[in-house]
Amino acid sequence: MIRLKLLPQDTTTEHQRIVDSVSGALPGAAKIRSHRIEPIAFGLSAIIVDIVAPEEEGVIEKVEAAAASAPLVGQSDLMGVSRMSSKLPT
Figure 1 (cartoon, one colour):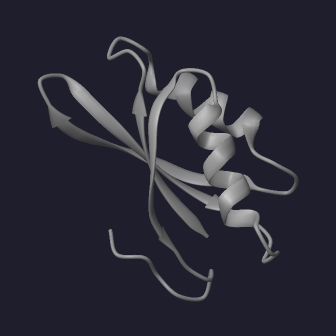
Figure 2: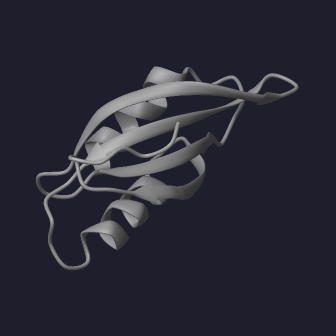
């Protein structure tokens, strides 16, 4: 599982549109498992997404690049990587 923090290009963009944009840009068998909204300040919120991807060489970099280049995403930061059997801190 790969956890990313996404910031929108524009604060007025609906969060679900950003999630859908990233979902459509993900490579191969990678899929968004869940997402949540994390308020930051002054109306700006980040979207924390958990992405399930197969264990393959280079998959983390591919997922990061796809999320960062998805339409409506202003910034993407890797928060953590874990196997599904373990938990990432919330």
